[in-house]
Image (cartoon, helix red, strand yellow):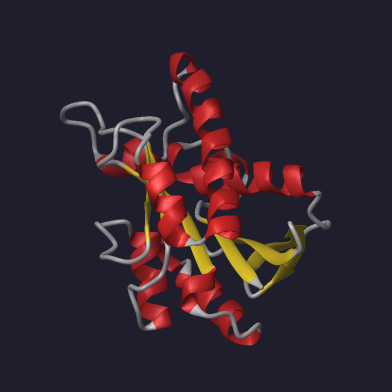
Length: 187
């Protein structure tokens, strides 16, 4: 069993914001994999799915970004999911819009959702797929930037990147982290 967690903030207000790309990728994966209807468990919206015989849990924490670990850690413990079988999908301001980066481990890079998950799991050795959202314009507060909707001119690139991110998750499921990193990070 694998746990795929997309990070974001709950509620209509945040639905299309830069911070919610993790939720957007989960929506695409659920569509592709014919995910079960969602249920609320562990302070998260949970869907079950399968891909090529692999049982997966799709998790969208409903705790708000900075407290994501409150959902992910108990869920992983309940299902006895190993760290290497967890994949976190999150936004990254340090990557240009549309760029993806898959890593097996490392620091949170200032991403508070990742930081919360690492603290609760007691390890940074958790695979993560970072989805580039670009830097805020000069003098704009980064917190305001991530809570902003994508611009209409950016939407086509965002939609294509969501598809590529979903492909990357499928690569991770099929081939493992190293092969998936080679494929995703070479783009």
